[in-house]
Length: 324
Image (cartoon, rainbow, N blue to C red; front, side):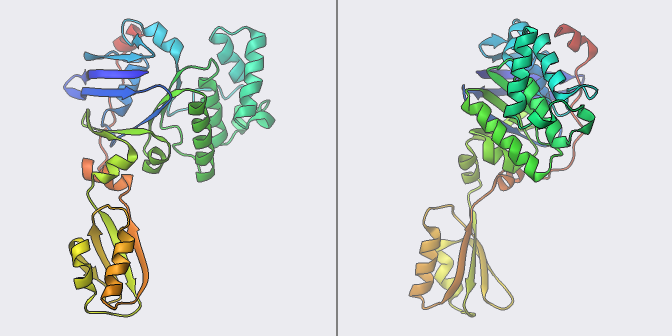
């Protein structure tokens, strides 16, 4: 449903995209991660027809984003980082307006608004002006507005930024429901746990290139090791020798001699092997924990120091005019 091949975009001397290839099959979520300025937003602008690539090609729902821009727009819903709803209107009025602007008859737009207010848990607030909405309510309304016409493809650009934990979880549930209904999603996010929780596949972009892609599990496996922590019942001088064949690298021993830490290969049944090795050596264990690599580990291993970079350049007036 979403495909790019060699997608390239430059702003003067700055290369925002240096030839990226992406593919999002129907009914799945692709999570796009990367440091600030990596090229994520530029890719979304091109795929939503807000910018024109300098080279390469991209298609959304079978339509070329340059030569069939209007068909692409009819096939997509977009939830941007900043809410696009009108604060002077009620939630219901916003949804009705979006429906009518999208070509729905007023009666159908009103029915669809009522349906979406109920689905997004906004029915009680539907007739309140948006100025009285919380941040989470506004984000849910913004997402509701993007699905008024039931688009088959959606672009969610950091949809939960600034939300409290409870509101984030609510948004995750809504996003899962959209996919269950058959939507295809491209999700950019700064929250690695969010990508881990929602995405079927993840693409990591840095300096305008896709530097890694795969399932969350396969990307974690690429880091090469997990972390082992063992708490002994009492200090044992033979513990490090008993664990030597199971770990990768040196074993760190705490000052009291009871806690051991080391990197270990990611492998099933490792905790059981550790307990058996220590038991065979006559060493009593209070606790064994194997911490698998997280997406945080993957991200920092791939991109290095997450220093803040300058934001990606906005499209020029000429480019915006070309998409109208």
